[in-house]
Image (tube, rainbow, N blue to C red):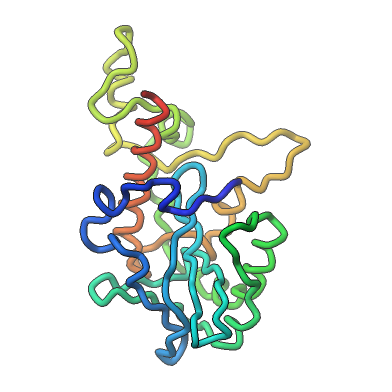
Amino acid sequence: MPLHRLKDYYPNYRETLADGQMDKITSYSVYAQGDDKVGSAKDLLVDDAGHFRYLVIDTGPWIFGKTVLLPIGLARFDYDNTRVYVDGLTKPQVEHLPEYDSDMVVDEHYEARVRGVYQPIAQGRSSRQFFGHNYSPAGAQNDSRAGDLRQMPPLGNRASATATRDDAVAGDLRRMGPIAAPAQSAAAPDHANVYDQETGFYGLSDEDNHGLLRTYEERLAAYRNRNWVE
């Protein structure tokens, strides 16, 4: 699944998305185990559906001055102090991360290398209660359309003159479940679903202070949906 830089995907996110707490992602410092600073946040990568997938980190003078990726689920946010903590991360692990360049294609092989370095940390998150496991309203599991913002009319809008009340309810973002992954052909690799499968790396949880992050995701998805519908 293609990944996009946040500022490319949503150029006006600072004015309309951030609520003053993520208006400058570059203001966040990144800390590893032992409160060691290992870099500064540089950008966020999102997928086509508007989900945050990676934090882009500039290690600057702390570790070889290279840029690396951090799976979003491993980032514990302290919004008030503009800090990101990665529990269990060590400087040697950061040193072994593959370098990221904004011009490169983040393919399945590259992501597998990134996850390989973070694997011990991701395993430690197995006891988390992730939002994706308890966010769907009753019955949404059997209604893929109810959980796919890409097919929904925006809030308070009816898609056509023939729309029913049920259609209007289905378009209410406050009642939405998580975005359903697109169907894969039998011949194609199931890479688009890897983010949902690897919750240890990409799952968002209250324990890691991801509530606001989830809200931002929903706004991105709604924004994208509005543009596609219009």
